[in-house]
Length: 128
View 1 (cartoon, helix red, strand yellow):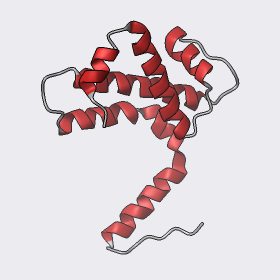
View 2 (view 1 turned 180 degrees about the vertical axis):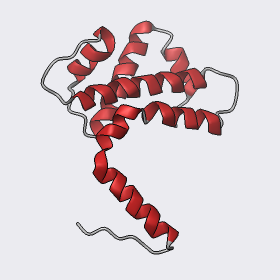
View 3 (view 1 turned 45 degrees about the horizontal axis):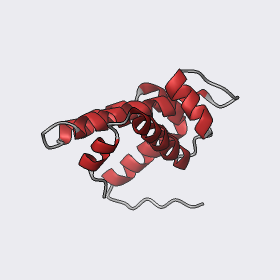
């Protein structure tokens, strides 16, 4: 489990803080299928520039994840318990409108189908 106090002490060094920022963003987005390399992530987050022929969605995801990580860091630095409102705010950050656009009609149709199925109390199965 991540000890936020130990992390805060480590991140007092600006170099460690930037490297942690890049590592978190790159690895988290890479797991989700983002195509940016580590160097392209660094170029985007540190220098605000893009390179390569990647979909704009990949750049948007990286920037939004960076804002979300910064928000989580600010919460960790406060002397209060993280509440439901904080989690809702984090969701708002991560699910900004551009990402809903990229989700497309198919995702909306799937959610609608799942909602209709759940209101009928039937089980939804998906064939592959």
